[in-house]
Image 1 (cartoon, rainbow, N blue to C red):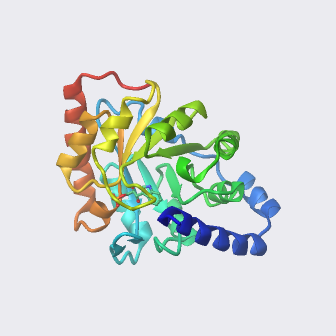
Image 2 (cartoon, rainbow, N blue to C red):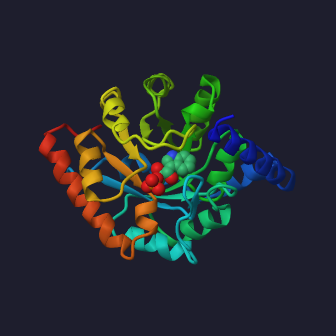
Image 3 (cartoon, rainbow, N blue to C red):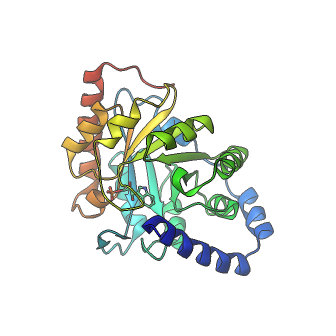
Length: 275
Ligand SMILES: O=P(O)(O)OC[C@@H](O)[C@@H](O)c1c[nH]c2ccccc12
């Protein structure tokens, strides 16, 4: 049994409990009554003038490192991320391993005007309706956790709700499956979710397989601006950063630095912007 299988077992148990408390029909009604979603594709790409977009994550703990930061006020942290120039805010809502919750998502949603990603292990359409009901604009779909049929159905549902999905990959085969499913935002997670090992070189290896017009995000393992520059040189339009921001005393300044340094590396490539 891999770490990913183990996490997903817990996610399914927690989901069963929420579903008993609030049936799908009720969540659907709440989702349809929520304010319209914001366009994350736009926020990640269009009009950024060669800068690299930063997706800043509210992350309390991780299965590999345990507690990362004592985040007493997730809304205040997200507001600092927004002030620093983040393009999208990511909120981990998985409880058992990452210490997150839908309450964190609610707090962040009410604090920022940016698109918000509900970061979780999506294995059921219920979670997508739930994300929308709580004001999220984007969900994460991890290819390694889904069949092609599920991936297709979940992408269709996000589109129907006016949301976007970040389709997360870690291997050549998973990038092929993401592209075949019609993903327009593809994340390459350099952390292998089956072993939790980080392999930063995987980003550049996979990024060039993604067709132009698709937003490519480098996920995980950003320690400093040099890592951002490497990912940008490998073709990243955006980076998703958790630990380095929640541990930093000045996350806003760090986001500004990452945006500038990544943008300079990206422009040095003389690569065409997506879209
Ligand atoms: O803290 P880091 O190394 O900056 O990583 C952030 C993010 O990429 C990571 O939290 C992540 C990427 N994909 C995931 C899937 C589920 C949970 C967490 C993740």
